[in-house]
Length: 209
Length: 209
Image (cartoon, rainbow over all chains, first blue to last red):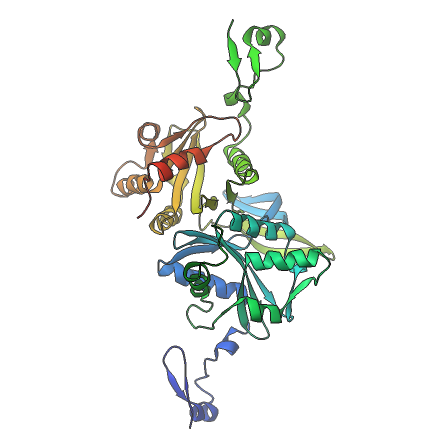
């Protein structure tokens, strides 16, 4: 009889599950289905904030407002607006007194296409790197439920190759070999700061100066 | 005959101005009329970015999108949306490898009322301070065209007084005495990083640790 140990410490007899169908095993991979990558990062950021470890937020989506109605006093209703191109990245904030900045992408395919990111977003990540900050791309391969941190210098290198006639995407194999896998965890769901600790603070890699 | 020396190095004979009425003297105070405080900060941030000194951006205004039409393929038109309460502050970014975060306010009155800022925004500034970042309020007294940096610990102190039955606003006189005046300049219009250098890097004040 096998016992499955879940991250919250509850042990459930597999047989019981099969027989009773309740309680459902809290399979991490399955539990993520339907919850999107962005929500998982936001939840993780809330966890870090609550613990007093970091203050990292998603920036609001930039919207160009064209027309606003006032159906009632002090009540503004936007009746015409358009999505604008973001000038920077999705997330930024402070961790261990450092500025941290990243773009998050979820890929259904087994590669990350450069069509998924704007050139000026890559430039922004490069700017942050040049100013001595921590910057990276965080990529989820959704079919595998694997999440990787790709530090900016590696992103720039691959992008330069693409610009010079190379492959227009970064294959999963590259991530597996050169990027940093974020181990699955329960709470926070995407414990990316653990990897940030390892890369930037312990190994002191991919940092200017 | 008096000579007015303008910040861009051009010397203009005052008499000439009075006689000819052209070229108009580029009076800094007047030139600011009609240009709002936010635009001046944005321009200054662009200047810092172009010079490779800092990467500080205004966050987009958070908007809750309710309904989107697609008048054409690949063209999204937001037809119903509402302004949301911002969860953090107006500006953040990186300067001298540090995380910097601030809220900007322009006051017509000779005091800064706590009604102008959300409690959770003050909490956010306090969080940043506690995490070792640089955070402050930047206030323009628009009638005087004077701009001050009020470091977070002073803001928190005055806010605590207000919560304990004290004055619900911070008078101009307090800013004049305890906050840091940003000297008028031409380019950038609001050279607030000069004051940041002084307070946080030279005097090492208002920083945790």
